[in-house]
Image 1 (cartoon, rainbow, N blue to C red):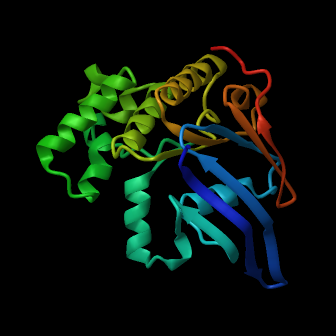
Image 2 (image 1 turned 30 degrees about the vertical axis):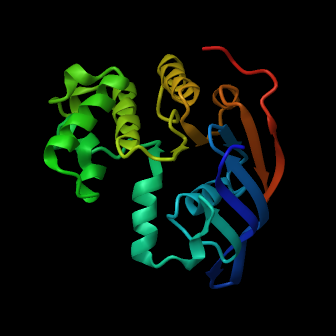
Image 3 (image 1 turned 120 degrees about the horizontal axis):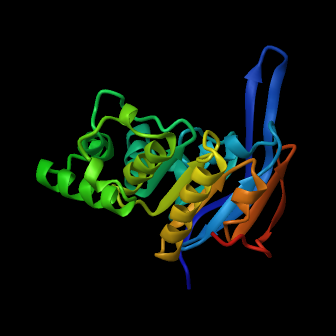
Length: 234
């Protein structure tokens, strides 16, 4: 039986504004098991990004339950939460978030520095991940010397270097042209085929069609959750 990586029960989120509480999520039940590849879609303001931030321990729910690998996140201290985030989760963002004055090797190894992994092991694992995304020969280049698609590959390598249980990707193809977007999605598909678990937020139906499961939000509610019936070959 596959392990549950994340599970939410009646998850709600509201922000306090001058006009009173602004409810974003209205009771979301969700579960992702090991090895799944889910695409999360929905219009702007539907709650999908807030949901992703809560799953990534970047935000907290107002009420309900969120379990990460079976452990209720609400029971964790800020330091424990940061440790779980660094150990179990890998993040890929639309804007790459690479350090412009650090080379690719330094950028990719950064999560291991925070995890206090010894220098030689950091270098070895960072080079392995750069090789995996096809950029090992560029290890000593700066991000500004690469194309947008190559920079996103570096971001994927950085997300993977900590050997996370779950990869969270927020609009990872949003800044890329069609061909480069397809290249990045081919990488995600290959990672999932090798066992990586992935949740990917996207506005693009063609990107979502590369996943195995489609989750759709509307007005703070999870309104659709099922298999991708016509997966797009890459």
